[in-house]
Amino acid sequence: MNATKENHIENTINMKRIAIAVFQERVASRLESAKHLLLVTVDNEKIKFRELVTLREEDSLRKIDLIFELKPDILICGGLMKMCEYKLRRSNIILMPWIWGNAENILSLCLKNTVIDGGYYSSRMFEDTLPHNFKY
Image (cartoon, rainbow, N blue to C red):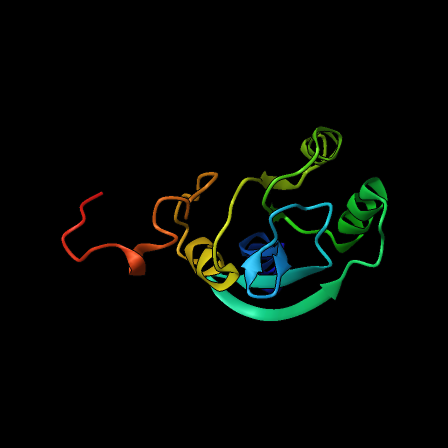
């Protein structure tokens, strides 16, 4: 294999597509009710392309089919129905459900390869409103 082809394969391996179900600037609370996906193409932890995709389907399973057509490597969302979760987990998409918070903050954690657990922002979501001496 020549060097150009090897470089292309290596670059392809490093590229990934992250889809985040969004409502305004936040991760949508339910995947099935999300009207938009933030679709981001990342290469070596840098954003190469981003777009806001409108999900026109109302039917939950058809919405999942539309997500499959977008071919994300990772799907980040809030809650979702069991049948949608089952369908997504049987695909090659890495599903990260039960996440909430600001979509840009979540995306930045992904770019840093930070582990994001379900409910990541649950305890820190209202941090600004806590007393200054409050400890977690």
